[in-house]
Amino acid sequence: MFEAIAFYLFAFLTVAMFSITVLTSQALYALTSLAAGMIFISAFFFLLGADFLGAVQIIVYTGAVMALYAFGMMFFDTTRELKEKNSSSMIVFGLSGLAALMVVVIFVTPIASEHISAIYPMHENVGNTQEVGMILFTKYLVPFEVAAVMLLVAMISGIVLAGKKMDRSLTQMSEEEIQSMQESDKKAVL
Image 1 (cartoon, rainbow, N blue to C red):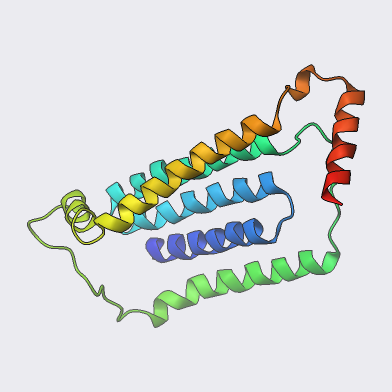
Image 2: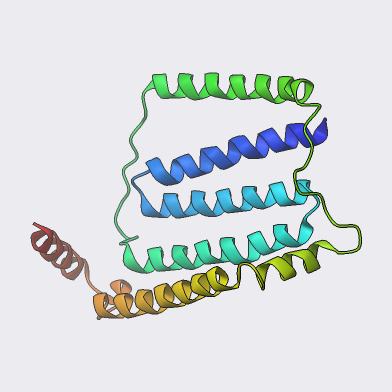
């Protein structure tokens, strides 16, 4: 029963975090919720007994999102004031109803899903880490290496773009210089 409750709780939190990632207009909010969603995904691995994959999920993917977060901090003006908009009460009411429905589903689903079994069971003589290594470095070697090269290219291009955009630090500039820079950026966009 604990596993079912934990599964549905983490499923709801994961979907909520990724929904915030897609629907928010603030880049730093999106990156924060993306990192939280990746951590909630690792909880699924821990629930299934795949501790190695859970740790890899946290270290690799959440670490990559944190690198994106650092790039976001470099690219976006964090010195400007942020004006929050209050949402309508209908959104709050809808989210409350969705949360109540989720609680009902969490408690009803384990009763209906007693006959579910794993498609690919674990091998008896091979551990989790060895099985992941065998599959990753045989069947999925090329996609693994392509993903590593893509991350390297993204990191290098982020550093190059940040170096081109920022000739001087925002903390060393006066208010007038920052405002004139923002106005020239707005004119360049138009």
